[in-house]
Length: 172
Ligand SMILES: [Zn+2]
Image (tube, rainbow, N blue to C red; front, side, top):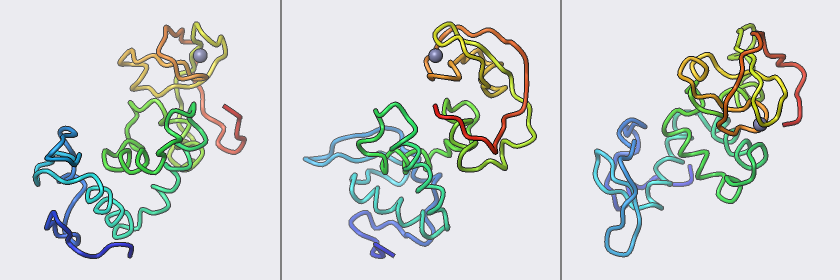
């Protein structure tokens, strides 16, 4: 365990939940930045330490490591700089399970293929890349039409539906 003390926040690390740490916004208190949660203001470093503690406590290290790897290598590069933070933030909000997330299919296909296997998804073609690819049904239904190839928000045309091959990995 990298961190076992309750620290400045006085939060009980054995019982604190991710729900309690959902933050409303980032704020500055005195000279330090932090997050405003229903448990109060938690300074950035402390917030991160608490999250890392929960990751180990709940045996989710593999998941957050996967998210970190995803942010470091599988995104356009804008998340690579602090991939660990993006991974923790995603884990905090349950992004990996959210079918509205633009990375839902690419992340889960690679790291949790069991979630994708055997399901059928809308196959669309976007104006930018002109190559067919899957998006989630929720994204399609809500008109959150993201290009399945480059991730850009754009107009898409439904061309069919199909399962995603989880055995063969394509380069994005
Ligand atoms: Zn595109």
